[in-house]
Structures are given as C-alpha cells and as structure tokens.
Image (cartoon, rainbow, N blue to C red; front, side, top):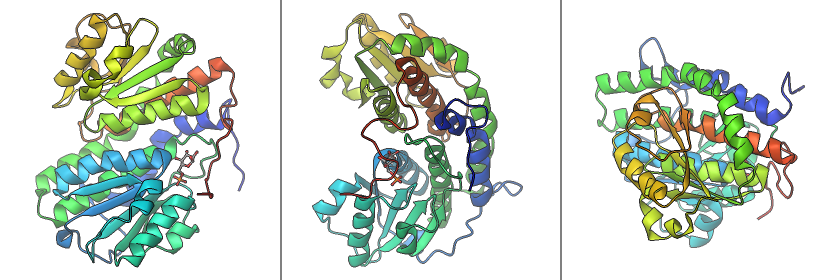
Length: 368
Ligand code: G6P
C-alpha cells in the first residue's frame, strides 16, 4: 500500500484535510442517507433493548471518542455508559453484569491495554464489540462484532481523521441504540441522521479557517502552558485539544471541564496562559461563556472556538474567535475537532518539531 503526503508538508496535515471525505466514507457505511436512517450492516450478537449498561474502554485519542459517545448513548438511547482508560479499567477488575456489552475503540486494534481490557470483559461473559480501523487486528479478531472506522491508513502518530471517523461511527451506533430501545422517534432519527449527513460540508468549511488559525498558532507557540475548557460533549474535545498540543508541540496543556475552572485552574490564569474555550451554540453554551468571562475578568487571553451565534453572545475581552459553521449540537463535537487539530498542527510547525513522529511517542503502543 502506497501512502504519500500529496501536496502536504506532513501526513498529519494531509489527514486533517482528508476529513470531509473520510467522514463521508464512514457515514455511508452506517447510514442510509436516502431513508435518513441508520442502517447497521453488522449482525449484532446482542439487542440494545436488553442492555442495562455499556462499558467502553480505550486509550489516548480513542478514549476521547468514547467519552463523547457517552453523552450520545445516555441522551439518545438512555443507556448508561461506564467509560475508563483501558490501563485503569483492566486493573480495576470492575464487576460486570453477565450479558452486558463492552465496547473497545482502537485505531490500530493492537493497543496492549485495550486488548487486555477486552480479554477481561470476554472472561466476564460480556458481549465484546470493537470499533477499529484495522480489520485484521488482534482486537478485531477477538471481538464478537467489529464496527469498522473506515478512515484509511493513518500515518501521523497524533490521531486526527481516525477520531472523527470513530465519532461518526459512534454517533450512528448511538442512534441505532436509541431506536432499538424505543427512545428515538422516527422523526428524531431522521433529524439526527440529517445532522450527520450535513457534517462533511461543514468540516470542509471549518478547514477554511486555517489562515486565521496559523496567525493564532504563531502566538500560541510562545506559551508555556495552555488551558482548554469545554462542557458536556465539548469537555472531551477540550481534553483532546490539549492532548494534541502536548503530543506534537511539547507545550504543556490541560483540558478541563468548564464548570470545574473555579475549583482550581482559575488560580493559574494570567496574561501568559492562553485559555482555549470550545463552545459552539448548544443548550449549555451560556454556562460555558460565563465561565469564560471569569477568565477574561482576570486578564486571561481567550481563544474562543464557536459558531457565529455563539460569537454574538460571547461578550468582551476575547483575544481571538475561531468561527465554525453552525451545525446541530449532536454533531458539533465532531466539527470542533477540526480547529483544535489545526491549532496543534500549526503550533507544532512553528515550534519546528517532528510533527508526524513526535519524540517518545509511538503510533501503536503494544507494551503495557
Ligand atoms: C498511541 C497513539 C495515539 C492513539 C493511542 C491509542 O498513544 O499515539 O494517537 O490514540 O495510541 O491507539 P489505538 O490504536 O488503540 O487507537
């Protein structure tokens, strides 16, 4: 298999730019666009309607995909979700009800801790499902059902297109679960599927903010510490943004739940620490924006990621606003991946790091 960078300087840039296509590709596997319905091709060895809990384990960026999906499964399918990083989950030896469903998310399908978590669950009589990009992997082989990610080979060590494809697949699965559990009406399913179908074009538009992001990244590359804030499904995206920045620019960054700001990190706020707020319009945006104003009032430099409506209500004291298209709040966390990826990427380029092969990191971690 020949994979090249095309016109891009790094694989990571190429993979970021592929996302309108890769998301479409994943969508076409999970969704019947004409009927505006989710159509799973896999035969499920369980019935979503019988489940009392879904247990998700993963590592790194794949963990954040699961952390977003928790909000979706709980909201759209009223299915309680327990999620943990695999290296914690496996040693916790959590009690699991027989016949429950465990889901493992892994781009490579070879991550040692995720595989160990899978084997633990299989040993506890769980139905084992996995979401992988590599169908020939160990995790896929040991699963009762394999949901494909379908984003093509990802070469950059820092995951980008695999995350948005994982999220797209998980969004589809959460709708399927909601339907099976009698939570989602046919009309609501149609609405959610339409939101997903609109996503690739919105992602293409979000990518167009690149020149503005380059300008912000130039300043971000001077920072020693960066704080990312988000609420609800944007909280995992804030953590992913911080992870991406750490991985490739080596700048210390932390992702925090916006509401927890006042319980600690606000003490760090000064004019030297940029605070990136991920807050597209949704039911919770006002709360997040008011947390943001607490940062502004203390002289913090704010970079706000939102849509045009969010920008209008954001208030004063914001250094930069990155506007993404307005989408249904269901798919907003997928869209919000784009600016955080571009910010990390361009900051790393300014820092002159080895973007595709950051120091000390491996694409697939097969040691425990
Ligand atoms: C490594 C990679 C990350 C990835 C994580 C989990 O740390 O550098 O990009 O998110 O492993 O990998 P997996 O293949 O299980 O998704």
